Length: 116
Image (cartoon, rainbow, N blue to C red; front, side, top):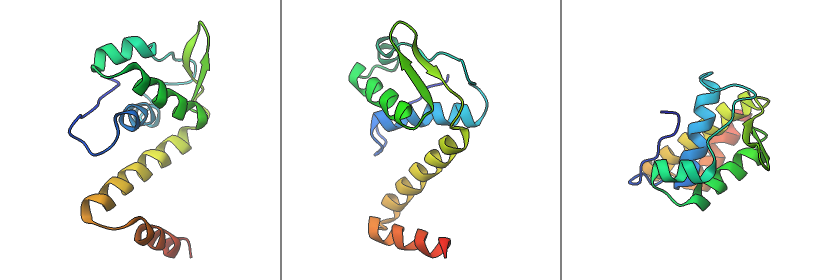
């Protein structure tokens, strides 16, 4: 299944939906031109609120991963493959830092050291 959510996860459901799309894109399970399920259909399938799916789709649109069009739905652009992978890794890094008790400021400091 392309989409997975874990209600017990500390990550918001909309981020989990978006991460599923990013992961599928980076793993080449979806490609440019593919259409994602309509928000209402996906919400029913995952048993989550339709607005949660719409928020995930809006996030993906803002990242350039999908294009939202009336009557066409959510279409994968395929232009943000590297960005998609980086966003997924960043989400995992943030989740791990929360799990281990590393604050946002500490994490930013760690990242800045890596860029130096």
